Each structure stands twice: as C-alpha cells, then as structure tokens.
View 1 (cartoon, rainbow, N blue to C red):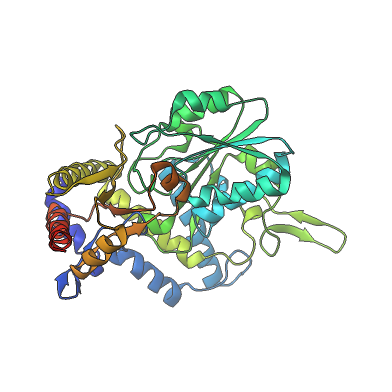
View 2 (cartoon, helix red, strand yellow; view 1 turned 90 degrees about the vertical axis):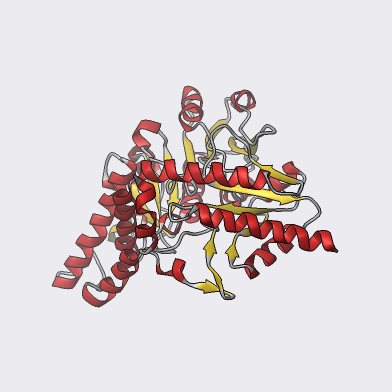
Length: 410
C-alpha cells in the first residue's frame, strides 16, 4: 500500500523536514513547482563532478560519457510518455519554450492570413501569448472554447468552432487553476476528424497521471521537468515525426546543423534540428532521474493517492465555518484546489498562511483571461503532490479557520 510508504518517501525530500517561522513546513504549491528528491540533486552533483564535458562532438572519454547520458535521458523520456522514437523528443527550456517553438515553426510552415487556431478559456498564458504574437504577425484568428459553471470545456461549442480555416488546436490537458482534466482523446479525435493537429499543454498532467502520446494520438505534447520533481530550466516537446520534419528550424547555431558554408546550410536530423547550442546535458540526466523516481513510486499509485488528498481537502474546506467558494468542480479533476473565502482577499489569506508555515499560491496563476470569465481577480490555490499528507491538509484547514477568525474580529 502506498500509504505505508509515505513517510519513507518524504525522507527523500530534505526540504520537507525544515521549519518556517518556527512552524512545521507545509508545502502546498506543487502546481507551481515540485520539490526535488535526493537522487535528483545527487545526479546533478555527480554530473558536474564526474562526467562534465560538452557533448556530441567530442572524441574524449568524458564527452562520450556525457553524450550517452544525455541521449539515454532522451530515451527515458520517450519511454515515460510512450513516444514512438527518441527523435520525437525535443529538449527545451520548459513547456513554455516548447509551445513557443511549435507556434513559431507551425506558423512559418502552415499559417496564412485568415487561418484559425482554437484555444480555450482555461489556458495558461504560456498557451495564449505565443499564439497572440502569431495572430498579430500573420493576421490569423484565435477561436476560444468556453467553459461551463463546473469548469469543464463546452464540447458542443468546441465542435462548432471548427471551420475550413482551422489549422491547429492548442489546449491544456489539465487546468492549472481549476484542476479540470480535459477529455484529451475525445478532443483530439474531434480535431482529427477535421484533419486538424492538436497540441496539448501537459505541464499539469504529466506529474499526476499516466501519459501515452501514441494512445492519445496527439500531435504535440509539452511539459516541464520542474513540475515532476526534476530540475528547473528544462522540458520537453514531443512531436510526431512528420510534423517536426516539415517544420523549419526554430533557432540557428551549433548542433542543429549537418554542414555550413557561406553559400548554404544543411540542417541536422531530428531531434538535433531543434536543439541549437550546447544543451543542458546535466539537467537532462537529472530530469531522467526524476522520471525514474516517479516510475519507482508508481504513477498509478500517485494518481490514486492524490485523488484521496484532493477529496479530503475539498471536504475539509467545505466544512470551514466560513462562506467559501471553490473554483473548478469538474467530474474529473487533478490535485488542485482553488478557492476564495468571502470577504478575505486571496493575498491576505496567502500571507497569513505563510506566517503559519503553509505555502500556497495566490493571484491569477498566469490565467488572467480565465479570471475574467470567473469574474474575480485571483484565488488561493493549494496543490498537492504524493509527498503531502492528510495531517498537512488538517494544518491548512485549521490555519484557514484561524485566518477567518482574525478577519471576523475586525
């Protein structure tokens, strides 16, 4: 049983043992970034101390060892999301850069004035702004899927948005605010029935559920290492080979070329065509170590346990002696709980929780269009990982009750 291992797993994350303001540290900001286990930090340390050398072109021992470690990391990612080949795995600086890469390259190759891209009201800014940039440059139109009162995509409206000018769908797999798990397979099947490719932003999905890109039949899938217990500054673009082959390069420089002369440049094969410059080969190996750690814990066990935490936390918040509004009540949710307590600004709530040793996120969560739809400026967001406990949720609930009493006294 996973529950019997929770304290053992928590020991793998030294930061969870510290105190904040002389209070036990309760970290509930996992949707922003996750904490890192010992094995990941040790992988970074060992990388710099034992195999640090620039990769791919060196013939000496360290360069060859670093190259193999980097490419094995790519194969680890491939296996983790069940991609067909390692060449479909592009290392980027994160999900944001991966979306920008697709937006830029897809626009260069396929978009013309009057074409349309479908987004949704629940998107993170990282899956809005790159498309707005292309809309301004190329005079394309952005079509927006609305959400219902539960925070779910309106599928009938989604179907109606398709037109002969629709060229791409770009949607969150899981909302970082609402926790809504969108019906990815159905969304993709609908788009493919119109011969339209789909990009899924998987930043909030990969840490919490099993992802099989071949089963989904998704054309592009992006996610970040730091949200799945790995280092910051590295992430992944998965793309079907036929699309990536058709794309022009995103950046120019070393590594992404086969040959260069002043008359002509021949670009490298996949995946190197999109990895200009020296890659983060230390980060990639630590990223792979994080994925292996998750595999050891078990992604299905993680998903089941986090669902228990979410259900428990939702019930605890609803039992508070205060008027509370929870945003996102989809029938299929991930481990995110966004809420407001009537009469208390989310920033005040977050600041007071911090003084009680509890880390949550407050604000618009890089989803200002969604906040406008909801008619609010921001929320308090508690987000869970497999190292969180019911005791920590009790601490959150008790602390929120203290916050309520402080404001009632005023």
